[in-house]
Amino acid sequence: MSICEKILSGKNREKNSLYVALFAGFVIGIGAMFLAGILFLRNDILPEYECKYSFEEMVKLLPENVAKNPLWLCRKVQCGMPKMQEGERIQIFELCSSKYAAKLLKEPESRKIGSMIPCKIAIYEKNGKVYLCRLNLPLFTRIVGGNTAEVFYNDIIPEQKAMLYGLLK
Image (cartoon, rainbow, N blue to C red; front, side, top):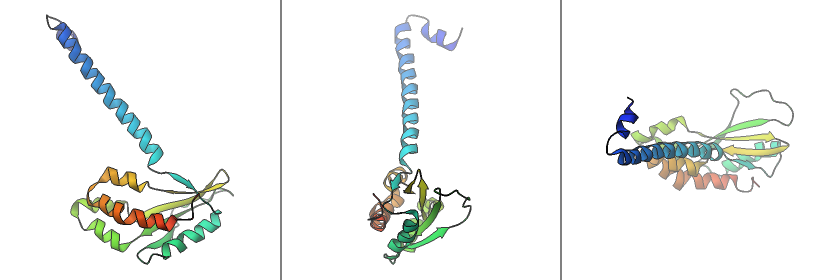
């Protein structure tokens, strides 16, 4: 006799059936939430923004906009760049602020964020258009919380938004 049959046998069959149904519903609900979370994060964690300018102009303008804020550095990343065909170029930039990196890394529980800084931005061509992609920082801050969220929300997000102002459609 299986465990389910033992549970469902006897005078409490209806009560036990209710518990089994509730447990099954709970498990199915958790699975559905997990699947929806994965689909949501997959679509929203790395949003693409269509750019106003050509690829060449964006690759020139982004570092210029970043340089307007003396607290930030912007450098091109060359490591591992694939050879691409015409109309499929990509350039990756790292944006870093030593002031905010120090704020992020001073708390022992926040030091894991060192694996995510400096912030990266990709500019690339796709389907005849130019896009900019970066980590969805507001969503990221909700996920990590704590000191990291506070520094990103209060300092990094507003300054990066100002750097990108006028570049995106």
